[in-house]
Amino acid sequence: MWLVAVSLLALLYSGTAAAFECAGVTLPSTLVICSDPELMRLGDERQEAINEARGRIGEEAWPALWENQKAWVRSYATACGVPPDRPVSFPVSGSIRACFKQAAIARIAYLRAYGVSAGAAPVPPPRDAGRGRIGPSFDCSKAGYPLALLICADADLSRLDLRFGQAYWALFQQLGPEGQPQLKQEDLAFFDQVQAQCQVPRSGPLTAEAWRSRDCVRDAYEKMREAWIARLTGPAREEATRSPEKHLALQQELQELGFVPPGPIDGVYGHDTRAAILAWQQAHGRPVTGLLGDPDALALEREVASRAPVSLEPRRPDERGRETTAPPTTSRPELHASGTAFAINTRGEFLTNYHVVEACASVRLRIGGARRDGSVIANDERNDLAVVRALPSSAPILRFREGKSIRPADPIVVLGFPYAGLLASTPQVTTGAISALAGLHDDTRYLQLTAPVQPGNSGGPLLDLSGNVVGIVSARINALAVAEKTGTLPENINFAIKSGIIRSFLEANQIEYETAQSSGKLEPADVGELAAKSVAFLECYK
Image (cartoon, rainbow, N blue to C red; front, side, top):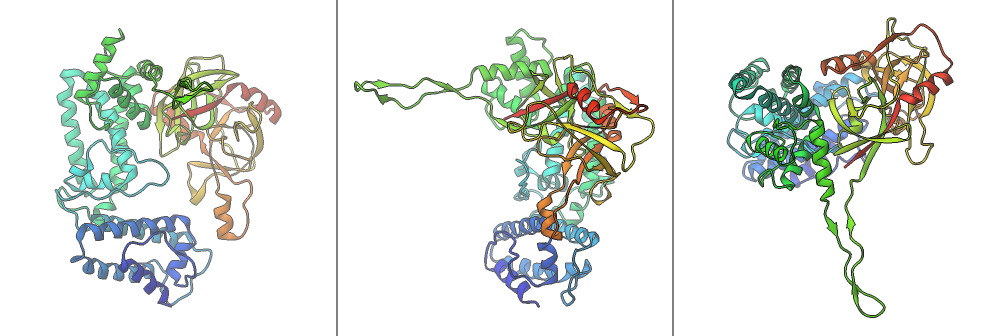
């Protein structure tokens, strides 16, 4: 029964290993890992961390880590309730999967910190297959204390650190010379507080114990960021709440125009970038604030687009032997993804999902046949929410349900633009019912619904039969993954973020919305017909 474990460990000892291999496995702990795509991904990441640690410490120190790894492999599964001498029951319980996941994450942190101390080589960041890594706001090669090493080692914390810096530097500029010293003191006090509150050591290597504090660190950063954003107004708020991707892209564009000095694009709008913004605003006769609000961001993007590089086709002889050049072609933004959004107020602001606009350099809305450029003014990655602002339109707004909460079996209507380019260009309307008041693993942020949802529905409204919003379509279950686990293909299991979560997000970002009582009932067709005027097709460009 130990044959598979010995084989895997032998592969590990012999050199670098690739993807987690599941063919022919019999060891109970390995069977558990192979039954869960997330655990397999963590297995791959753990192997990468082992390979990186081996390269970092050298062959002389490698045997000590090898013995340590063998001991861990033999112990963690038993601690999670899966001993090597007892068959595992399928489907694997949620508690066992959670224990395996926690053990894997802690082990990866240990391996990434192995042989790393303050001032030494940085912890190699974990790979994030889901998206390009964003952040942090500092150079990880110079990280010299555990909190910085922790941020560098976690992709989510790296991204949050950049967003944290967005809020700080926007507030720094808004306060001006009189308020900046006090803000610096707030910042220093925050770092002291988070290290004490989350029990992160102030020196030494990144340990497994410190890695376990990442949720505490994440919560503290988010809370401080929200507090700073609440103090922002006008262009400072617009700058601080746009997506990190666009924040970085704007800094890059200022550099391309010659205003930001050559160097790395880090998303820090400190002295050099502020000076560049001021110079750009003065050169173009715009209000000189040193902040990139939405109108300035749009003007900057258009200026860079107008200077797009021109490429020439190779010179070729014509039929008379003369060299000719093909007409020049100008590079254009590429359509990256599409989704749905809907009007929530009369200021031209539309609600959508964060994952729809996450990687966008620019966004465009199509409302009733008219196209409008938009910009992301607020986002919440954890709850998958974002707000896009365009020029005000005549689109009627959708109101949020007030009063009695929706219940399981209540009928609902969903609108969106699935499979853009294949189906009709008008909003698609589907119907169904609420099947549960929680999502996967009892996540109370979600509603579960039976209405069919396809790629492109993301960001669409979930409506009751009064036409009021009770949620925003966010996700559908991975049918193939479930089928591989259970042998059956799931049907009509989709999810939407609850309206209460949405309203809290809008209020935190001071974005207007309206509510209405769900008193009368309409026919589903009438709900769809009325709401279609409020729904926009959203295009995301890179």
